[in-house]
Amino acid sequence: MRFRTTSAAGTRAVAAALEPLLEPGDVVLLSGDLGAGKTVFTQGLAAALGVTERVTSPTFTLAQSFEGRLRLHHLDVYRLEHLGEVLDLDLPGLLDDDAVVCVEWGEVVIPELPRDFLHLRIRLADPDEDGDVRVFDIELVGRSWQGRALAVETACIAGVGAAPC
Image: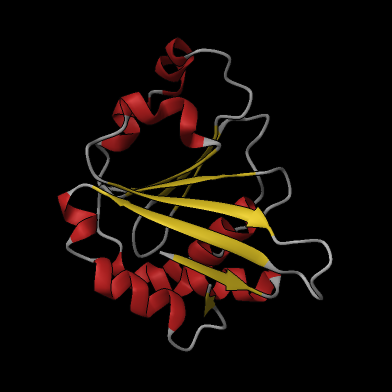
């Protein structure tokens, strides 16, 4: 599944549209270049969950937790050099917390993730395009997310400022 947004507000709107589909224990893996919109997506998701605190990238703290409709654990694993460091984050504990876990630069932790997760790859569009265009590639990993495929597609494309590619 591929679509694009044309602004940071559009990226936040996509996250907000996906929020009703989230269930306790869901994992959202975000990957993409620096500045592609991973934190912007998480900010939109947090706001839709009812989080009132300011959400910033946890690059140096590695993990932040927020209370909303569902608890949100926001991780940034960019600085991890090997998989063993995941234990320092207590990733298994965070995954068992009935919260939504949103992981920036999450490719590093894929071996430690449950069998079901939503993988969003975000990239900057061609620099010749006008505006703040981001291209999203969505991979629905596992039975739970594959069962929500139509709902994910509808949420991302219908009425949230995202356009299919």
